Amino acid sequence: MEKMEIKREEFAADGVGKIQVDAGSATVTVKMWENPKICVEAELEQGREYESAVLGDIFQVSCRSEMKRGIFWTKNTGRKTRLTIFLPREKRYQEVQFSIGAGKLHISGEAPDCDRISVETGAGTVEADMVLAKERMDVEVGAGDVKLGNVQTPELNVSSGVGHFTISGRVSRILNVDNGTGGGKIALEGDEADYLCNVSCGVGSVRVNENHISGIGGEYKAGNPGAPGMINVNSGAGKVDIQIG
Image (tube, rainbow, N blue to C red; front, side):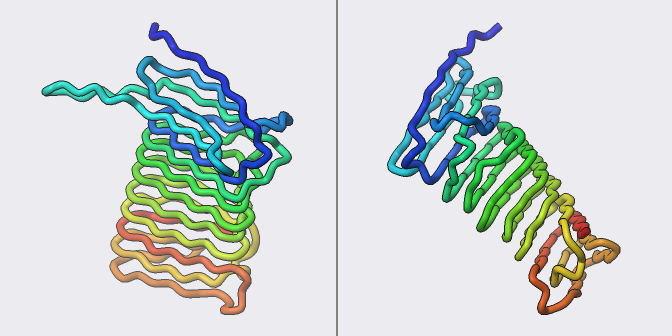
């Protein structure tokens, strides 16, 4: 069995307004706790590059694999590395950013209280039981899989290449979906009358409740122009399913 290096670090959270996590291929779990400090518990594979620090008002966590190269081979370590990040429950953050390459991110139970949150994954997976963003949430899915439950935000922007997304919650003002050959499902709270919809698709398909749009140049516009919310969907060869209510 490979020996793991164990590290535990704590940081004062008083002046921290932003969080940046670059996880690479590690598994990251985010938990809220009563302690006023930020804590990182790390289980690191041998040769794993890891660093956490507070720089100005930014708390940064970086975890990357060392690359061992030969003439005919490349070895990438890091998939067994685990990071657990504990954030103060009562603190509010201006911005939280997660970059998950081929790794995993799990926001367990409660979510950090923030104005803006962004999640980017390459071939990795993201799961969150709850997401709170008072201004905006951005989700970028490469070839991975994203599952977000109980999202609460006025603005949600979803961009997907060949990956898949499953999102549920309330988006009070605007939902933007830009999908390539992947796709997914979004379940929104509220009524269909709460949104003005603008949909276009290529050779794929988009479904908004019982309205099905498909075929090259398919378009769909419906709803009250004075509605408080807007849904914009642009999909290429993939499939997007949006359910309201």
